[in-house]
Length: 97
Image (cartoon, rainbow, N blue to C red; front, top):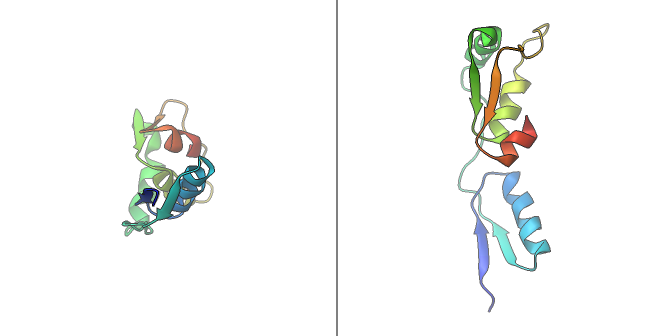
């Protein structure tokens, strides 16, 4: 029997990885060991949005973090401030930005 790659990322990334691995001819299956939830304090995320211009860098650690942060952008909030950098921990997070 061929070895199987177990992908423990949260969904939907787990399924995306499985598809890519299978396209390379590998056996793979998703076994998500984490789940991604909404921010427990959306009001804090909104406050962070309003204070962006006071920060030099906002570091995003996953595509999910990018998605959740931008989903909570307050209505009427100006675009990302020119003086604030958005950092990422890898290419997936960079692509999400």
